[in-house]
Each structure stands twice: as structure tokens, then as C-alpha cells.
Amino acid sequence: MDEIFNKLEKIIESRKSSSINESYVANLQSKGLDQILKKIAEESAEVIMAAKEDDKDKIMNEVADLFFHTLVLLNFTNIKVDEINKKLSSRLGLSGLKEKYNRNKIGGIK
Image (cartoon, rainbow, N blue to C red; front, side):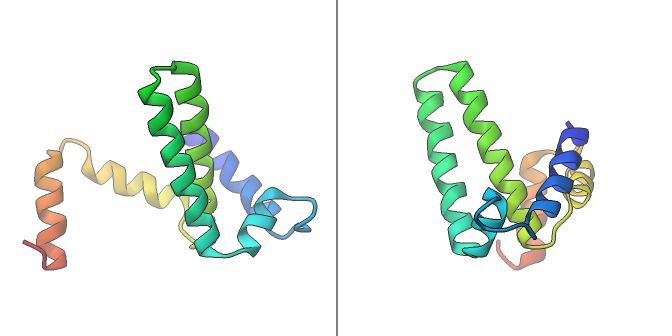
């Protein structure tokens, strides 16, 4: 899956400098962070609705949309897919509860 995310990352990067009339990515990014977050919220809600409908094909389509818009967010905030890969790799083999505890402890939340 890394390969497709890396390819999409490159495409998103190349499209953000395109005309907002010719590129969805350029258009969305020109509207700023709040609009990108709104799209992620919409796509998240659509994933939930598809799951509630128990429609596997619809779930896959909506998750693909959510992943894409998340990649647009990462590009907008200058975070690379490889950085997310490293973060996830550092969590492999670590209990989710322990990882969350460690993150909250470091952040000052107990």
C-alpha cells in the first residue's frame, strides 16, 4: 500500500500548482485548511454510513475517498507519507493501550 500512497503523494504535489479550474486538488487546497478538514469530515461520515449499510463495495469506495483527502491534508501541512509510515512502524508490536498511554504521558495528559 506504501507504493500507491507514494504515487498519490507525488500526483497531489504536482497538481497543487495547477489552475484551480483544472485541478480538484489545487481548487481544494486554495480554499484552505478548513475546507480540507470539512471534506475529511464528510468522507468520514460517508465511511460510517457505508459500514452501517454493510455494503463492502461502498465501504471501499468511501475509505479510498477518505484516504485521498487525508493525503491532500498531509500535503497541505507538509507531512510526507514516509513520516506516517515511520510513525506507524514505531508502533508495531506495541499495545494500542500502551502507545496511547505513552503519548498522553508525554503530552502531559493522564
